Figure: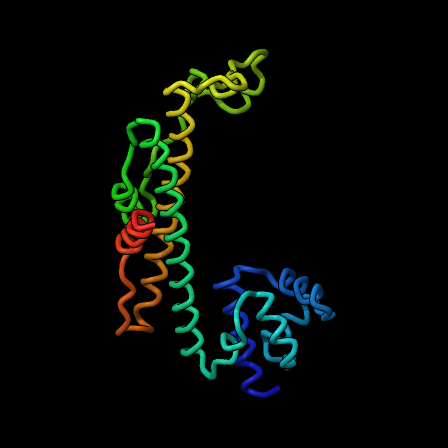
Length: 238
Protein backbone atom coordinates (compact mmCIF):
# COMPACT_ATOMS: atom_id res chain seq x y z
CA UNK A 1 0.00 0.00 0.00
CA UNK A 2 1.04 3.62 -0.43
CA UNK A 3 2.53 5.93 2.17
CA UNK A 4 -0.61 8.08 2.13
CA UNK A 5 -2.78 5.04 2.92
CA UNK A 6 -0.60 4.50 5.97
CA UNK A 7 -0.97 8.16 6.96
CA UNK A 8 -4.75 7.99 6.60
CA UNK A 9 -4.74 4.90 8.78
CA UNK A 10 -2.73 6.59 11.53
CA UNK A 11 -5.02 9.60 11.37
CA UNK A 12 -8.05 7.34 11.73
CA UNK A 13 -6.52 5.59 14.72
CA UNK A 14 -6.07 8.95 16.46
CA UNK A 15 -9.67 9.96 15.79
CA UNK A 16 -10.96 6.62 17.04
CA UNK A 17 -8.89 6.63 20.21
CA UNK A 18 -8.57 10.28 21.19
CA UNK A 19 -11.86 11.76 19.99
CA UNK A 20 -14.24 8.82 19.76
CA UNK A 21 -12.78 6.74 22.61
CA UNK A 22 -13.96 3.69 20.71
CA UNK A 23 -12.61 0.20 20.21
CA UNK A 24 -12.32 -1.38 16.79
CA UNK A 25 -15.31 -3.64 17.27
CA UNK A 26 -17.57 -0.62 17.83
CA UNK A 27 -16.27 1.09 14.70
CA UNK A 28 -16.84 -2.09 12.69
CA UNK A 29 -20.36 -2.41 14.11
CA UNK A 30 -21.23 1.14 13.09
CA UNK A 31 -19.98 0.47 9.59
CA UNK A 32 -22.09 -2.67 9.34
CA UNK A 33 -25.10 -0.56 10.31
CA UNK A 34 -24.31 1.52 7.22
CA UNK A 35 -24.13 -1.48 4.91
CA UNK A 36 -20.40 -2.16 4.90
CA UNK A 37 -19.18 -5.71 5.72
CA UNK A 38 -16.55 -4.52 8.19
CA UNK A 39 -15.13 -6.40 11.16
CA UNK A 40 -12.28 -5.65 13.58
CA UNK A 41 -9.74 -7.02 11.12
CA UNK A 42 -10.87 -4.56 8.46
CA UNK A 43 -10.56 -1.64 10.89
CA UNK A 44 -7.09 -2.83 11.90
CA UNK A 45 -6.02 -3.21 8.27
CA UNK A 46 -7.21 0.30 7.40
CA UNK A 47 -5.47 1.78 10.44
CA UNK A 48 -2.26 -0.07 9.61
CA UNK A 49 -2.36 1.17 6.03
CA UNK A 50 -2.58 -2.40 4.75
CA UNK A 51 -6.00 -1.82 3.17
CA UNK A 52 -6.86 1.36 1.25
CA UNK A 53 -10.17 2.85 2.32
CA UNK A 54 -12.68 3.73 -0.38
CA UNK A 55 -13.81 7.34 -0.50
CA UNK A 56 -17.43 6.29 0.05
CA UNK A 57 -16.36 4.12 2.98
CA UNK A 58 -14.47 7.06 4.45
CA UNK A 59 -17.48 9.36 4.17
CA UNK A 60 -19.73 6.86 5.95
CA UNK A 61 -17.08 6.02 8.53
CA UNK A 62 -16.39 9.59 9.55
CA UNK A 63 -20.09 10.43 9.53
CA UNK A 64 -20.63 7.55 11.94
CA UNK A 65 -17.86 8.91 14.15
CA UNK A 66 -19.27 12.43 14.03
CA UNK A 67 -16.50 14.10 12.05
CA UNK A 68 -15.64 15.02 8.47
CA UNK A 69 -13.11 13.21 6.30
CA UNK A 70 -10.80 16.20 6.78
CA UNK A 71 -9.80 14.66 10.10
CA UNK A 72 -8.23 11.63 8.41
CA UNK A 73 -6.82 13.20 5.24
CA UNK A 74 -4.01 15.16 6.91
CA UNK A 75 -0.72 14.69 5.09
CA UNK A 76 1.53 14.52 8.16
CA UNK A 77 1.38 13.20 11.71
CA UNK A 78 2.15 16.66 13.05
CA UNK A 79 -0.86 18.16 11.28
CA UNK A 80 -3.10 15.33 12.44
CA UNK A 81 -1.98 15.60 16.06
CA UNK A 82 -2.53 19.37 16.01
CA UNK A 83 -6.05 19.05 14.63
CA UNK A 84 -6.92 16.37 17.17
CA UNK A 85 -5.64 18.62 19.97
CA UNK A 86 -7.70 21.53 18.66
CA UNK A 87 -10.85 19.42 18.45
CA UNK A 88 -10.32 18.05 21.96
CA UNK A 89 -10.31 21.62 23.26
CA UNK A 90 -13.48 22.44 21.34
CA UNK A 91 -15.24 19.42 22.83
CA UNK A 92 -13.94 20.18 26.33
CA UNK A 93 -15.20 23.76 26.13
CA UNK A 94 -18.64 22.57 25.02
CA UNK A 95 -18.76 20.06 27.88
CA UNK A 96 -17.82 22.77 30.39
CA UNK A 97 -20.49 25.12 29.04
CA UNK A 98 -23.11 22.39 29.36
CA UNK A 99 -21.99 21.41 32.87
CA UNK A 100 -21.91 24.98 34.14
CA UNK A 101 -25.30 25.79 32.62
CA UNK A 102 -26.74 22.79 34.47
CA UNK A 103 -25.03 23.98 37.66
CA UNK A 104 -26.66 27.42 37.41
CA UNK A 105 -30.02 25.80 36.71
CA UNK A 106 -29.66 23.58 39.78
CA UNK A 107 -28.47 26.41 42.02
CA UNK A 108 -31.42 28.56 40.95
CA UNK A 109 -33.77 26.13 42.70
CA UNK A 110 -32.25 27.11 46.04
CA UNK A 111 -32.95 30.80 45.37
CA UNK A 112 -36.46 30.08 44.13
CA UNK A 113 -37.29 28.37 47.42
CA UNK A 114 -35.46 30.78 49.73
CA UNK A 115 -32.76 28.25 50.62
CA UNK A 116 -29.06 28.96 51.15
CA UNK A 117 -26.77 27.59 48.45
CA UNK A 118 -24.08 25.46 50.13
CA UNK A 119 -21.33 26.34 47.62
CA UNK A 120 -20.55 28.70 44.75
CA UNK A 121 -19.55 28.15 41.16
CA UNK A 122 -16.33 30.02 41.91
CA UNK A 123 -15.46 27.50 44.61
CA UNK A 124 -16.23 24.62 42.29
CA UNK A 125 -13.93 26.12 39.64
CA UNK A 126 -11.14 26.40 42.20
CA UNK A 127 -11.65 22.76 43.14
CA UNK A 128 -11.47 21.80 39.48
CA UNK A 129 -8.13 23.56 39.13
CA UNK A 130 -6.91 21.91 42.34
CA UNK A 131 -7.88 18.50 40.95
CA UNK A 132 -5.96 19.24 37.75
CA UNK A 133 -2.86 20.32 39.67
CA UNK A 134 -3.06 17.36 42.06
CA UNK A 135 -5.06 14.39 40.71
CA UNK A 136 -4.64 12.67 44.10
CA UNK A 137 -6.38 15.48 45.99
CA UNK A 138 -9.62 14.59 47.77
CA UNK A 139 -12.20 17.28 46.98
CA UNK A 140 -15.94 17.74 47.23
CA UNK A 141 -18.23 16.47 49.96
CA UNK A 142 -19.05 12.77 50.50
CA UNK A 143 -22.68 11.73 50.34
CA UNK A 144 -24.38 11.94 53.76
CA UNK A 145 -26.29 9.10 55.41
CA UNK A 146 -29.84 10.56 55.23
CA UNK A 147 -31.42 7.71 57.17
CA UNK A 148 -29.38 8.59 60.22
CA UNK A 149 -27.21 5.48 60.05
CA UNK A 150 -23.50 5.33 60.79
CA UNK A 151 -21.18 6.47 58.03
CA UNK A 152 -19.06 3.36 58.70
CA UNK A 153 -21.88 0.97 57.73
CA UNK A 154 -20.87 -1.18 54.78
CA UNK A 155 -23.23 -1.78 51.88
CA UNK A 156 -23.41 -5.48 52.74
CA UNK A 157 -24.33 -4.70 56.37
CA UNK A 158 -26.99 -2.25 55.24
CA UNK A 159 -28.55 -4.71 52.82
CA UNK A 160 -28.63 -7.43 55.51
CA UNK A 161 -30.58 -5.32 58.03
CA UNK A 162 -33.95 -6.96 58.76
CA UNK A 163 -35.64 -3.55 58.67
CA UNK A 164 -34.01 -0.50 57.18
CA UNK A 165 -35.17 3.02 58.06
CA UNK A 166 -36.81 4.69 55.05
CA UNK A 167 -35.12 7.50 53.21
CA UNK A 168 -36.76 10.82 54.22
CA UNK A 169 -37.68 11.57 50.61
CA UNK A 170 -39.44 8.20 50.31
CA UNK A 171 -41.91 9.16 53.04
CA UNK A 172 -43.37 12.14 51.20
CA UNK A 173 -47.04 11.64 50.42
CA UNK A 174 -48.64 12.47 47.09
CA UNK A 175 -49.81 16.07 47.02
CA UNK A 176 -48.09 16.88 50.32
CA UNK A 177 -45.86 19.99 50.22
CA UNK A 178 -42.18 19.33 50.77
CA UNK A 179 -40.55 20.77 53.87
CA UNK A 180 -37.49 23.01 53.62
CA UNK A 181 -35.42 20.13 55.00
CA UNK A 182 -36.63 17.76 52.30
CA UNK A 183 -36.12 20.35 49.57
CA UNK A 184 -32.64 21.09 50.87
CA UNK A 185 -31.82 17.39 50.88
CA UNK A 186 -32.96 16.86 47.29
CA UNK A 187 -31.44 20.06 45.97
CA UNK A 188 -28.24 19.38 47.88
CA UNK A 189 -27.92 16.02 46.15
CA UNK A 190 -28.58 17.61 42.76
CA UNK A 191 -26.01 20.34 43.39
CA UNK A 192 -23.38 17.81 44.48
CA UNK A 193 -23.86 15.99 41.18
CA UNK A 194 -23.79 19.24 39.19
CA UNK A 195 -20.67 20.45 41.01
CA UNK A 196 -18.88 17.19 40.34
CA UNK A 197 -19.72 17.48 36.64
CA UNK A 198 -18.23 20.99 36.55
CA UNK A 199 -15.07 19.87 38.35
CA UNK A 200 -14.59 17.03 35.86
CA UNK A 201 -15.24 19.39 32.93
CA UNK A 202 -12.70 21.89 34.27
CA UNK A 203 -10.04 19.19 34.58
CA UNK A 204 -10.74 17.93 31.06
CA UNK A 205 -10.59 21.48 29.67
CA UNK A 206 -7.26 22.16 31.38
CA UNK A 207 -5.84 18.88 30.08
CA UNK A 208 -7.04 19.68 26.57
CA UNK A 209 -5.62 23.21 26.79
CA UNK A 210 -2.24 21.85 27.90
CA UNK A 211 -2.18 19.44 24.95
CA UNK A 212 -3.35 22.21 22.61
CA UNK A 213 -0.73 24.83 23.51
CA UNK A 214 2.37 23.30 21.86
CA UNK A 215 0.59 22.97 18.51
CA UNK A 216 -1.21 26.32 18.52
CA UNK A 217 1.16 28.72 20.35
CA UNK A 218 -0.51 31.84 18.94
CA UNK A 219 -4.01 30.74 19.93
CA UNK A 220 -5.44 31.97 23.24
CA UNK A 221 -8.24 29.59 24.27
CA UNK A 222 -9.44 31.62 27.26
CA UNK A 223 -10.07 29.97 30.61
CA UNK A 224 -12.66 27.86 32.45
CA UNK A 225 -13.61 30.96 34.42
CA UNK A 226 -14.36 32.91 31.24
CA UNK A 227 -16.42 30.06 29.81
CA UNK A 228 -18.49 29.87 32.99
CA UNK A 229 -18.90 33.65 33.12
CA UNK A 230 -20.13 33.65 29.51
CA UNK A 231 -22.71 31.02 30.45
CA UNK A 232 -23.80 33.11 33.44
CA UNK A 233 -24.15 36.20 31.26
CA UNK A 234 -26.23 34.32 28.69
CA UNK A 235 -28.55 33.04 31.41
CA UNK A 236 -28.99 36.54 32.82
CA UNK A 237 -29.49 38.05 29.38
CA UNK A 238 -31.85 35.26 28.29
